[in-house]
Image (cartoon, rainbow, N blue to C red; front, side, top):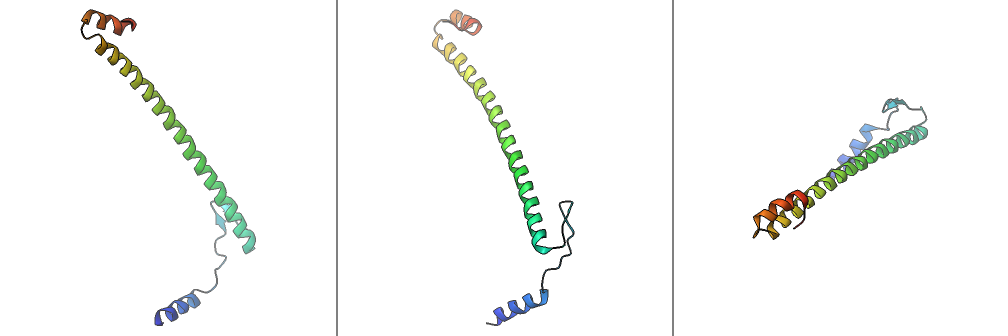
Length: 102
């Protein structure tokens, strides 16, 4: 019970919020508190959309890089498979690496 009384007294000490912040992310805010809140929300949403766009772009770049790596690994696998298929005939294995036919 003493704890809740202490919390209430702390709330009373702080008092109402002041309109001390006159800019948000470099944009001047209006003096009306409701309009100020709307403006901060609008600016925050814009920042969020930009971050989301950047994250999406970096994810797309990662997908492209992984696709390139996957294609490279697939070609290596085909090459090694062809070599392993012709282990009994080394002359054909050398020829397969050059023209990919057994």
